[in-house]
Length: 509
Image 1 (cartoon, rainbow, N blue to C red):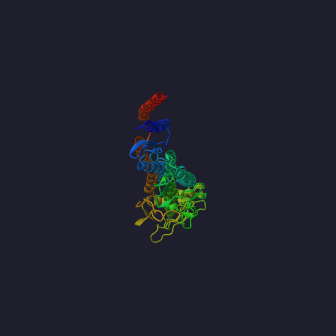
Image 2 (cartoon, rainbow, N blue to C red):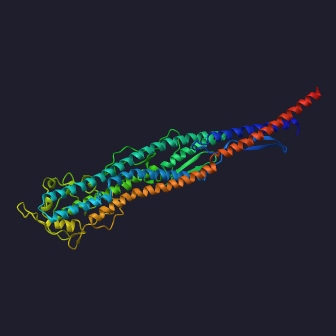
Image 3 (cartoon, helix red, strand yellow):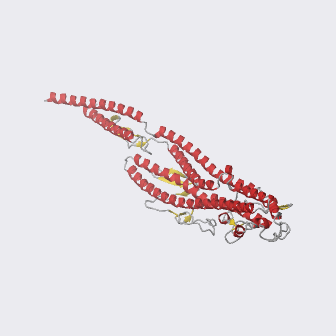
């Protein structure tokens, strides 16, 4: 090997080592930066006629496990979805009160029955009559609170959908810009590693909005496909997703004939195809979970009012004085939103004696309650007929002896009649009230458990990804020492070649 070639080979080695040391220094400096992955810089041997003539640096590349990144992103999306469900459902759970303290819907139904039992022992006692009215008002207030909490959570779900749509559009636009930059850099033979780190950070944020699959192409670009087969448009500055603002009422729904807006993707409603992440969770809460909870509370309130009414005591109504007919389908009936409107009949509040005497006559009918005539104003103070009817039948499983109560609706629920409830096979008010609390509180508990499992998986995958693709400062420092040693060796080679050149020129002179 001639001195010129030796010098060229040693100098190319120094350039490679300088870039590798710069790469190592950059990794060490960014070791604590979220999203930064370990980089590698390899050299390629150059040959001519089978003889080595030096080395050339390759573009800096990432040392990552793409499958591991995808799994972690999916876990992040599950955590984000679970956290949103937990947050929105926590308010509903709190509104139900505490079964242990007896102030939940089921407990307060039992409290109303107990107050009526106490009045049955002394029907002439004005204080006990007032106690019944107070217990009824407390129960109505609890149902109002539950309905209000469900409505608030539903509005929060709608607002969360709008927030996620805006974030999704912004992230997709940024990914599109990085796609273009990566394609240009790759075509020019320059490193795209830092740009890919930035893009993966944004893809992780998209995964928190929607469950997606990432397709990586040979030119460096990516295509994002959401679960359900929706290819997400990537256009810098674009706003492919839209969602109109809306005020969500108990009778509102999304779909045919509904008033709630859908998430539109370039003019097409894709709401029911959304899955995973905060956007999918918010859509499910707004359009399924919370409307079902509202319907369950409405059924409880409606059955309470109806069963009292059937025995001759109009104890509960809405502001218009209406008592829902629970034998009719839920959708489109007075049951929709009744939990939020239920109140104690103002006539009973003004005259608590009506809880003993009755508010109206009942005409016997086949399959219905037996006949009842209210106690006259001059009737006996110890009148107990109505109280016995209420205790035996309103709080029992029968409308009259041998005639079962109308069942608690568990199907064809929701404002559009498309939802169903797991609360089936229950016969009494107290059983339904207790099951209602347990089921709706359990929904929040299930959301928390799902979130915690996803957090555990995310943390495990994060630790594994850090081990596989993260920067280990100790190893990088050791690598830096090795590179510096190699650099010194190459530098000595160049100095030796320089001395040989000087000796040669001296001999020529």
